[in-house]
Image 1: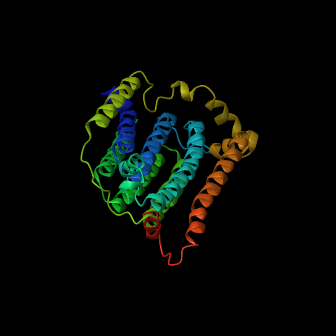
Image 2: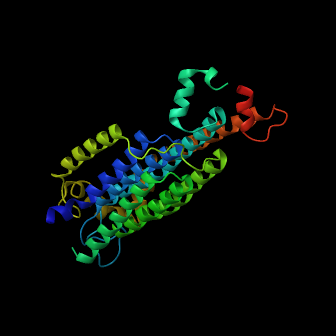
Image 3: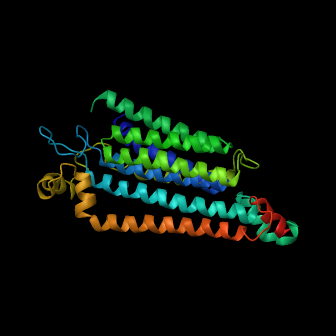
Amino acid sequence: METVIGLFNYWIVIVLMMAGFYIVIAQENMIKKMVGLSIFQVAVFVFYISMSNVFGGTAPIAAEGFTLYSNPLPHVLILTAIVVGVATTALGLALIVRIKEEFGTIEDDRIRDMEEHGEESEA
Amino acid sequence: MNPADIFIDIFLLLLMAAVAIAIVRSHLMFAVVMLSGIFSLLAAVLYVHLTAVDVAFTEAAVGAGVSTLLFLATLALTHVNVEEKHKPVRVVPLVIVTATGAMLIWGTLDMPHYGDPEAPANKHVAPRYIQESPKETGLPNMVTSVLASYRGYDTLGEVVVIFTAGAGVLVILGRSRRRRRPGVNDEDGDNLEEERA
């Protein structure tokens, strides 16, 4: 039981990560792939923040009467990662808008068909 | 560790897992985007519970706010409402994902337990920052002092990344606007397909 509680966070993180991974490799819609990628990202964030937590510790802001704090370093890393993650998401979504204008679809398998069969299948 | 804390932790994590499964199964794009906003917000609540208040603040503003807005804008620009030919389950990816997940779970078995103050990650560099940074920088918030003072160059690098991404978005989207202009009756993207045909 103690092991289950001690590792439960990590197990759910892996479930979330695999849900995102499944969307990216198995589903064709590109917007949905970006959502899958951001689920994967959040799973990594939850993993780091879980590791930084200390039982009985408080938020890492120095105050009178507290001596035990959570580890602030993973917080800093993830703070940076969240912002960079949104920047990459924005770039990916801009590319999706361009792909829609160019191909008329954002379904990965249909674009692959177009590339393989060339222009004649479209015309 | 207090049982109520563990209960809240498990409850939030299960809720996040349920939302993630709902995203995998849904094929309405608007629902997918809104569920991803809910997912980010749940993550923010979990971060508050795990005493990472700065991260929770950023996740709520940037993850749940800006990200969802970007996804909604993309939906509006691409006119995509429903995923085409939604396949319920695909076997090969499912096997790959299950195998990867099983190996990762096997890998967690010898990890230090959640909340363990003796975990190596919490023993090495962190105590130095916790004890010295309020005195050295004069800031009570250790996350801020590491972000803006000790690792200020990293934050500068982060700003460069955001600037580059912003410039990239403008270049990618701006180009398509210019290319549309020469057409006579150009209203939206539909005419591009006609030209190609």
